[in-house]
Length: 540
Ligand SMILES: [Ca+2]
Image 1: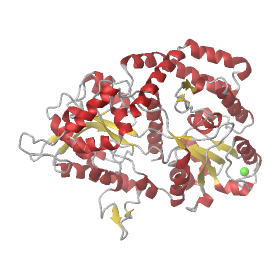
Image 2: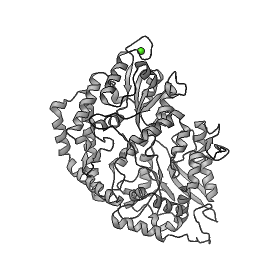
Image 3: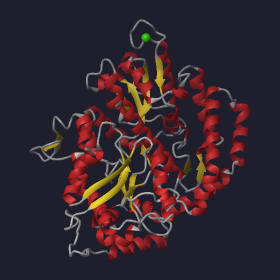
Image 4: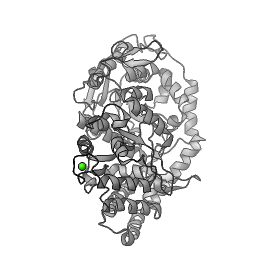
């Protein structure tokens, strides 16, 4: 179970990375095409004389839809036959025929099947967000705007969400995918402190780098876990992919997105900032030299962090907020369900710059309708119904009387069964693997400890938007694909070498910057600048 959850969260990180690498907006004319399609759409009757208007059923004739999608990240969950999922099909009046591929290997296994057209699926979940429009340009998917007569819920959602509408609009002005959505400003990665250790040290959660270092030294030098040995404490346990989240902002850098725009809209690559990024590396290197960053931080994974916390060996963590009460606090030997005995979220660290946390874009798993489907209208209607507010209620809460009840004051609460996570997963809660499901803050609040939900409410003020999520043109994606892999690899290897002191920041940093320049960073930055300009004009 723990391993499965780990895989799930890592895939979110990977998806975020891929999304951060893509981009660009709807040009003026393209946006008009979608707006015109929305304005002209009106429900029409199908061949049997049945007219779908956004509520179930979607057809009077029944039928079967073949859907290529992903298994659950919980190995014991049969997501295609989960009650919540079946409920949606039952109401819609169609039967699912699943072609499901494993959660962990979905990208590598599904991608060639989709690209080769070697599938009979009517509806396909794409493995990524198609940032470079590879599937779109291959003609594999139907332009959904040509079927907006059958998609009243989707067009209302596009009207209500102009940013996502701009992000979904392809270079050719069409929209090809119905997306699920992530919670984007809530439950994002943040710092977490062992509250018992903080209290024992007589300190508050620090909000700046200097106080933070003071705290780490205290944790390193004292018997925080009270086992009589003052040398077995690990001041903090941080997976290496979270170091940029944790320390970049104090140096004015969004190292999570990589590319960032200043107030004037000038785009730069944070990893090539010869002043601030160098200071960032000097700081992290000093943590490493002092034994404040674990010697084997490079290979640390989430299971190892959980293991250290379960033995009360570490005082600071940084991870997706979800881990706070669901994976970290709950394994502490003395956790009693309150914040006083937990790993508690805290404000970001500031340095010369004010700290922030990097949020994420809201677009998630995307579904398209195959151009080789013999029932495109039915598939469009089903996707439309499956993304309706009515179905989102099922995805977030399940079925009334089984997974949740409605209280006298109108609020909802999970039943005893619903509070059993394994049961709830088997029931098909948040079936984003197979349907366009939207995450909900309200439903998440109820799943985590009350103090955790409160911590999230306190922290959302620090969230800053990441690099936006917009398609690349062919030329842009060619440039990015040609150069960005080598640039990223160079950045990654130098970062580790500088932090561990294998390379010297005084003598080797200029060499690092010239290597990035030799790898055509300026051309990639130029592409990112053009994309950002388009994005800003699409929004205004
Ligand atoms: Ca100790």
